Length: 331
Image (cartoon, rainbow, N blue to C red; front, top):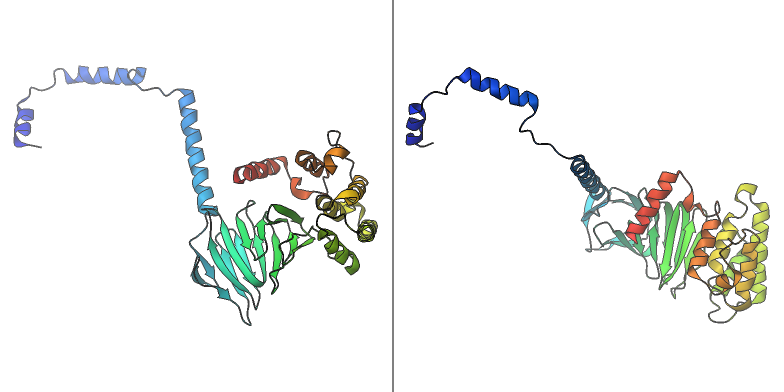
């Protein structure tokens, strides 16, 4: 404050009737006169904005992909050197969402993706992942496929020729290549061969000859599958259903058949469709003709009707709703 301002303030006359002035001030405060009123809609909007900001900040901090991962306690930067294990395994922390264990003899590298994409490239060997997060945050690239975590635990193996084998123990994993995909649930296995042809989920307890026949059917190309191979597969699935407990009797065979009907042609597709109908009737809006022409909406509608075979809809309603919203946002 300048010296002139001080002099002017000291020379000013005192406030007239100070007690009367304070009485007026107290009366206005009691009546609320001059107060600023915030409308209810504005207050609600401000509260909603604060909530969204808080939740968004929390989601970002929890699920954002780190620039460095911890490998047995040491920091490893993205897109740098390959990690190779010799006689010992190596544990990697996947940000805040889980961990990966590279088995001896594995070769992997951390990759950079979007802000929320935790990516790992597995060139050879095997790894085990345990992820506790919403779907589509953790990805593993192999020479022949992309494995997308849908909230689960699984083992992934890459052979010397690049062929990829997936074994899921908890939850679901999507295995994709060139527009084809298989959604593999807990307890099932799927394989992508060295040429990048994705297999369908199947029970690894199936007889070896049935698994070999399944592989031949998937590689039939544009030709109809061999009738003997297809009959062997369907018989093995029927036998597995008879051995399974009643509450999960359709589970593994139905998932295998739903994937398989999209990969075979001609009479083979019709035979697989009939086998699936014996396990779960088609919804009213799903026609045999639509399924045989691979109508996407009908296939998805039939898939959803296979509950409880298709476990992605298990759980409380609010959990299911939250998962579907998340998947819609991530897609």
